[in-house]
Length: 181
Image (tube, rainbow, N blue to C red; front, side):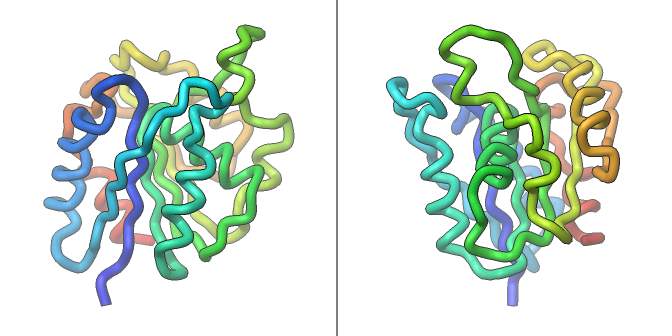
């Protein structure tokens, strides 16, 4: 039976299209033993979380126990928010987060994106967590990775020299971690 991977896109007007290259790279590197689900999330500007939290939960509900969750940028931060504030309906084998922003500030628009102070203690038990971030990311500052490292010291952190926000559209390193779960 093929292992299930759910890929949550990043934000922005063309986030789904931009991340399609990441999904293609991941599928190519993983091969036929893995099936990637890549739903297009709809953005509701009026919702504090853009309506993504509910959609992420609905997508996880469709899959089997042992699902592997991969998410990019805004999607990665909202996946963490979902997993720390809701109970996932399925057992999660791994959580792999790419170019993940750590939201701070007092602006009204950012309030629905911020993680709760105790988010790290509320993530699913027995799920391996990986973070990937390129030093030359111009969208999400590299120092956001240090914030996550401080809050989630048991996670695995992959610092990548080059590749920008889209990791050079090459997720070979992510595929290797998935295969080793």
